[in-house]
Amino acid sequence: QRLKIPEDKFRIEYLYESKGRLSIKEHSNGECFLLDKNKGCMVYDIRPTQCRTWPWWEQNLKSKEAWNTCAEECEGINKGRKHSASFIITELEKDKNSEKENK
Image (cartoon, rainbow, N blue to C red; front, side):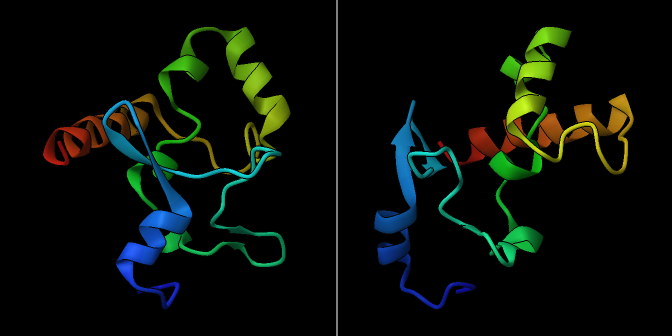
């Protein structure tokens, strides 16, 4: 609805399936299909769990080195508001629950 296109067109143009779940497509440079260079995320206030839990994904939290590597690629990491561990854990639990509901 936000993009003013039918759901089936959105699924074709913006999503792909990976490991049994839908994920947002990325351009060859790694940028999200829903990112507008001038306006930012086109769906930020209603972004999916995949985006709300970034950068707290398991592969980024494995080590300080993994976190720093991720930070080199994402301009927002280590900037702005800091979140408590309990907040992050709650968000990750929401992600796990959302995955279970969508299977």
